[in-house]
Amino acid sequence: MSTRTILFVCLVALLSLWAVSGRTETDAVVDADGNWLEAHAPLVDLEVYYETLCPDSRNFIETQLYPTANKVGHVMNIKVYPYGKATEVQNPDKTWNYTCQHGPKECATNMLTTCALHFYSKHHHHRRHRLDKKLLDFIYCIENSEDPSNATIQEACAKKEHFSWHKLSRCAEDKLGNELEHRMGLKTEALNPALNWVPWIVVNGVHNGTIQGEAVSDLLKLVCDTYTGARPKACPTPLDDEE
Ligand SMILES: *[C@@H]1O[C@H](CO)[C@@H](O)[C@H](O)[C@H]1NC(C)=O
Ligand SMILES: *[C@@H]1O[C@H](CO)[C@@H](O)[C@H](O)[C@H]1NC(C)=O
Ligand SMILES: *[C@@H]1O[C@H](CO)[C@@H](O)[C@H](O)[C@H]1NC(C)=O
Image (cartoon, rainbow, N blue to C red; front, side, top):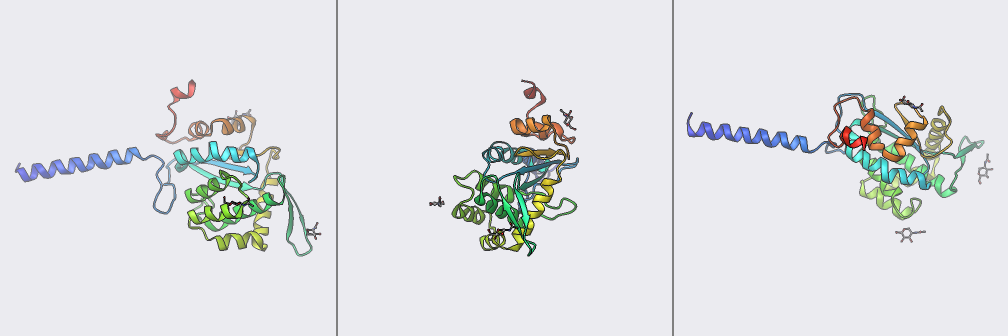
């Protein structure tokens, strides 16, 4: 082989090594649009029914949902429903009056979140409304703040994700947000068993005491153990689990 050929072969070998190591390092891979890259096995379907001003819901988002999605979001299909134990009555003009556990500010914050889900969910393939990283960042930004109902904070969180604050705040104040929130209510009221606690967790269509308990104490382990594809690198090794 000529020196040139040898050099070329070495370069190719080095480049492939670099490419392979680069790929194994990043596990929960996010593309340029903030989509988690597709996994091959069925995604773990996670539904979170919650209230935007509820301390337990906020704690779940901060300590379980957000960190877990940042590690293994690419094997998850996350859907959130901000409604919880709210109730609604319909007006003659078909709009709804909502009553929320934590007062009118919570209803307004639920609605704003619902509007963000409506405008900014990625509607690709059959995974309609799969939560992407930007939406989760937005929800985390609000819920992890001093006051999720504070419009100044909400606006700053929207701007951080390049969401239109004008569009969101308008939606939350008019008929669109009012109607969208009603759909959240219908989804929540259709739960079987019925919701009696928030956050209410459903994994692959099932809610029971085991799933609820594991989700609020160690969501990462629950997702890792439920996923049937190759164990993501960010998952604790099964040995760690047994401790
Ligand atoms: C909804 O709220 C408005 C404003 O407070 C009130 O006037 C109206 O009667 C309420 N509608 C129902 C059906 O209770
Ligand atoms: C809302 O948040 C901003 C920024 O943190 C703060 O300056 C303002 O006082 C808050 N408003 C209310 C009503 O709490
Ligand atoms: C809850 O559901 C999971 C998944 O279907 C199942 O493996 C588990 O045994 C159930 N736990 C209870 C207490 O029913």
